Figure 1: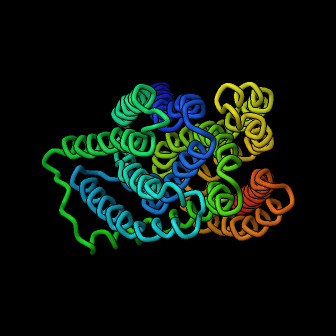
Figure 2: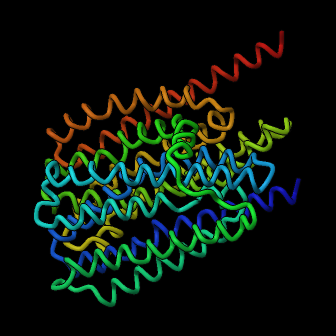
Figure 3: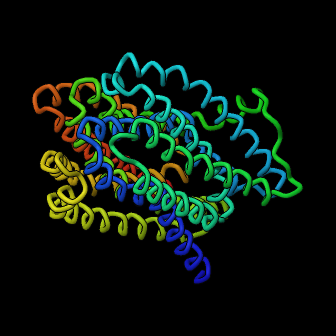
Length: 420
């Protein structure tokens, strides 16, 4: 048992290193770009990166959860290769399918009117990020591979951009230097998966294979998209109504929050395969482990909210240049969401998804997504770009309350059945 706990702790640490490399390390680019670009160009860059993350959700399709669950349960290398074949084929299909909707952003969002190349960058970056076979490394407990590759990529991007990008060449140089390390990393990790599978080779592309994987991952894809409609979509929506300067401030604050909040999902994702295996084995320690996980996540959430609130003014001033005052205001609003997301992440991953109750979770987030869009529109009309942050806070606490109620009711139902 002690060795299992040590291995899990190492996986959590390595998962967070990989995450830090992908999303936290790029935060170091922000002060460079905020002081080197004018506020409009900076706003367009930030909006493009937010769009890339949102488009990436449609290509990733929830496979980092659903395929991880499959890989961690697979008994042979051939079975894992079969899963990887279907998953990568599905992602390639989705990458092609999202290209035209991405171009539609040229007509919908004024942010790209003066810099249409960033639409292509947003799509390509989102596709390359989604094509990383993270599910394979998570499911086989080889997170060190992905952590080291992502760390090297992040350092390369930071060094190249800081050294080579200027105001005069940023229209061409910045997109190239953002995409090049991402392309190399995706190709390397894909090749690494192929080598580790050895004789269990990944098959060639076929639409039948892609469709098979899409049907398996559909439930968790719905979950991710519903979640995006009350999280990242608020920024996409704001891009239609506000200036690049305001969008730059909102996206800057949002980048910090996403980077910090992602540690909760990384912790949960690292624990997730272990809890799946414990449940499959009928391990009696699962209930206690779940309680420890949710208590730990909540503690981290409260601490994270306090740190964000007090650090927001100084952090924004250091990172965001001319937009720091508005960014700090938005960041302080968003700080209130941290404990709610800690609760929701723990319940979602460690209770509902482990137990295969994807549909129940989907119903909760679907209600939240449907409520957020009109609420966000109303609040942005009345409170400006800050209204998007307020809407997010309201929706996340409502979700946390619903998930707590659902879990307690399920626990009481199970206990009643056991007593009978």
